[in-house]
Amino acid sequence: MIDHFRGGMHFPPAQPITWLDIPSSVSTTPLRITSPHKPVITLGQSVTAGQRLTEPLSPADPCIVSPIDGVVHAITPWPADTFHQHKHQRKPSIRKIDTLYDIHITPNHEETSAAIPVAPPSDRTLDHWFDILRSNGPWPQDEIGCDLITQLETTRHQKPSHLICIGLDAFPLYSDRSSLLMTYPDDAVLGTRILGDIVGAKHVQLTLAHSAKLISQLKRPGKSFNVKCICTDNIYPAADPTLSAYYFAKHTKLPASQPPSKKNIVIITPWTAIRIARWITRRALDIVQPIMIAEPNRNQTPSTHYALPGSDICNLSPLLHGSCEALSDRLVIGNPLTGSPIAAPNAAKGTLPPTVRHGIQLISILPSNPRLEPEPCITCGWCTDVCPTDLQPVHLAELIAIKPNAPKINKQLNFCIECGLCSHVCPSHLPLTQLLAAAKTY
Ligand code: SF4
Ligand code: SF4
Image (cartoon, rainbow, N blue to C red; front, top):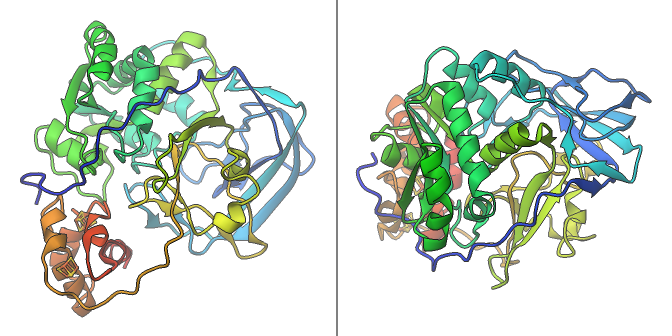
């Protein structure tokens, strides 16, 4: 269990990057929006920005809306029997969905507004907010697996004790979250306060790395809005929700298989807070998504972009332009240790270019090293030494091989946060994280 955090990777402090101002308009290309929910629009229908496109499967599922004015020029269903989706769990779980729908929208104009004209709720009642947020979803937190709508749904029945905005960087080489905090400090704090008030959290907190510049930016708004700013060492994987909950919410043990709200904690990232605050102050909801593209093996500043959901990722940066196919096995959403492959296989049509989704904040381009073959364990113990939740990864993997699904194993698996450190340090190249992650789906 998590008694102390002795693992992790230490890097020199990341240099914050100034994000450009969120644009008021963006150039528009045809969009392809993928949904697990049935479309409510028809072929050839005109749609307007903010119009609902799909019928959610359950009352807690967010609606998917059109980011632009345009015409639906294709709706393509495709089989999705292995579709993994963040739902009520923090890590991907297999959810039985037979069909996914690609909704293709041709824009009416070459330029479009970067925000949709939706008035924010006029009060701070949770039910009202839940309905409006859900209608204009999705609000997923792909990178931390904490879906906002799912968490809000839980808090309708029980007020959380804590709301934590994790401003620590998910991977210290990339300053994605701290850069957003630094660029929009007032909005990040205000949005955190607003969500804290809506859910009725007793403690409203924002975690950030020790950085004099960052602290000075957040000190004043933190004091004004009564949001406690907590500084800590940004040692990977300190930004994981399980570790954040343990260290910043009275040692609450947060199994990786449950949303934080089940343990009376709501966890958000800075972009959600910034989006909420800007919605209140500007009375339009940003529909563009900030995305950072980084290459860990090249010592270069990551590039930052704003893109509409459904747009082609390959067009985001000259680094990717026209080469997504060639890079497909080297592109991951998120950091290199835990990121998921970016290309979505489409059984019917081969691999289509990947598209932007809300919640993707970081894309890493991995080096093209040949994959190393696993060798027998040499019992060096490194995997145990680095595990931040005090598991014995190789022992657990051996138990799974002998008796998968044993209750004792499942209990321990719950506390694997899939940080990737055990696989990363293993001199025998054993895919421990992958084995443990796969065992959760048995
Ligand atoms: S991925 Fe490995 S190091 Fe990380 S929590 Fe799981 S077992 Fe521990
Ligand atoms: S790090 Fe790899 S080689 Fe070392 S004990 Fe763990 S599994 Fe075995």
